[in-house]
Image (cartoon, rainbow, N blue to C red; front, side, top):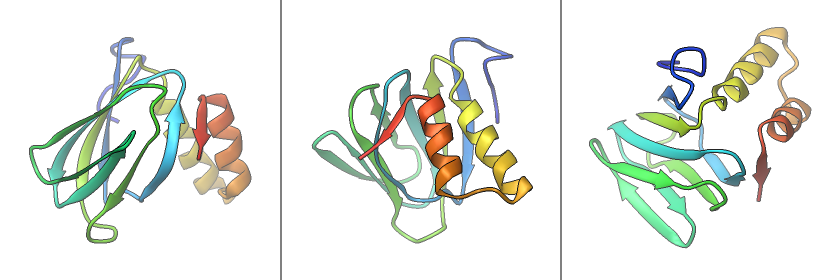
Length: 120
């Protein structure tokens, strides 16, 4: 976590290292902006697909379906800025579930419901 609600209030900034592919989903509360640092990534936002590399920026407004996949599995790094702040709690909850050994579909479903994410 680079910045969160406790430090800025207006946005959070998350560094994703070797990120998982993210299926198509919708956020009801926040906009997301992705800044690619390493490797190639494919982002889908609405009906558009973007194949991007380092230095690229992709914007996914709230309410618009979007998803992500790495071109090379488990390789890559990008920053995700969410506005307003608060979505970083989703990642903290999943991290806590993983550390407790309770990570699984139920943990994802519960966190998604709390943070206004609908998986498509």
